[in-house]
Image (cartoon, rainbow, N blue to C red; front, side):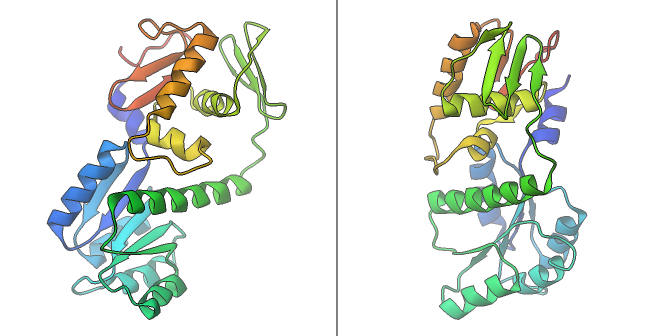
Length: 247
């Protein structure tokens, strides 16, 4: 199993539309370091086409672009897609912000933002989108079984080889998220988005601490894991029986 294929399937994909190529590179490097897959486009028309093609979890778009500006792109995009859009602008006046939100932006951020503020806003629109999509799905209460591991989301209970697991709330949510995606890599950022009840600091390593605790409770050796495998520099995967991402 190739890691590149797994990341293409599971990565949170972001489209960045801005005519400032240096700014795009800086923001792309910042978000990719957190586990996001980021595509960049430098004009509105191409950005609209890529956004309409789909596959993105969110779009970050500048308002002031030559040719087709961000407002025009957003207005046309909303005819075809409800993908979350975070607008960036050098214009900080309230009428400009209101105009963007009325056209269909999910949030609006002046370009004087800090990276921490951008990340917090991005995580917020992604979480809102995830909540909305989950309410449209069938109830996710069916038990999940991965080898000897069995989890019942409805009762928030779990067993390992028929022995009950005693887990904290966050540990249970992490394990359930990994189990539902068994065999696929989950980045730290994805796990933060799916289980966090608060905005984590950019370099918060609490996911690693919870994973370490989970391994102890599962009797798992990180050097030779049976359950949770670390994918260095990326995140974690709950292994299906008989599989290894290093193969």
